[in-house]
Image (tube, rainbow, N blue to C red; front, side, top):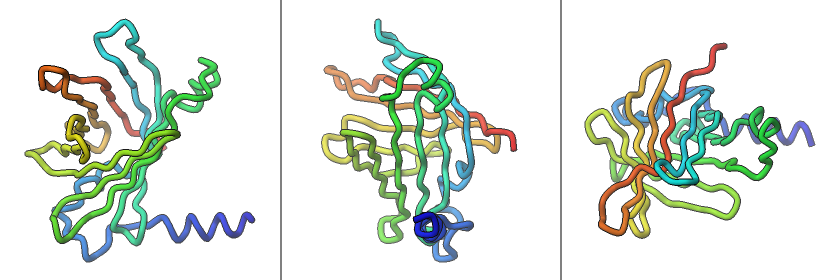
Length: 172
């Protein structure tokens, strides 16, 4: 069984961007690696929650995709806070050469979301595809940190921040 797991990981993960993907379309490449984050959820409500989390990004699928593991609270915080059922999800982002964008799929227990990523200036805006009432925004991306926010449309059709994350690269 151990060898099968290794072969799966070796076939899934890629060291480099696929040469057939233009460098200017490698929007998520700067996120590759391990990140610590401060997570804020239900901002401005009685249920507002702040904790530490983890976000791990890797190139996958012959260098055409980028997958992440999204862990909130972090594995360490889950033990401290006794929260074994918190969010532990994954996102697969695949470059779409015909549309010059990225198709994005997020899943965790009981949830599945399809989104499309577009570049807006220096931001990456990822919009949910069914009702288009949710979007994720990556901004301020550097070698050491990035900012991520989850927006939803409220009843007045105004974008409201539901979740906010500041991620800092883990030191090796």
